[in-house]
Length: 224
Image (cartoon, rainbow, N blue to C red; front, side, top):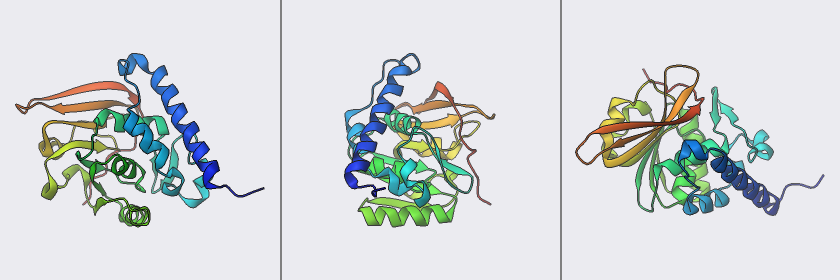
């Protein structure tokens, strides 16, 4: 069998994005008619997802399924990952904090969209691996190892916060570091199934939470 070429991988990426758009259409009731943002669509077509999974899973990188990346963590199904990014409503220059770097795929997509990205993970092996990928692909992303629930005070406030692990309620420190007028996307709930939610902070500081659809995420880990 011939080896995969960049042309083959580009076709797989295009098919992945088409499937994401189908999922957006199927979830129309939950999403209120939301469609995939064109800038996010372009980024999904550009970022080589196969380089952000373990090498042995590279050929499965564009399948419509979550993939294990080690330490009992997964890279989200393409639709869920894209939806979470879409809900952040990023524009070039948006300051965004990601809690749960993994191997760096979501941060790379946000950087491709022109966002100013800060990402944090409690697993040092993840942050080291992600940083190596960002450097190799020339993505400008600030990376830190630590307790994501505590955020990143030195760079706050953030206009957007992405949390790729579940919590019973929005972590207080993250809400505090969310800029007025900003939004956080996070799976909320104490059980095995959570609700993908958008947390918005109004200009006056009032916080509202909108639950959109059921999802399954691992729990947000707290370091010592």
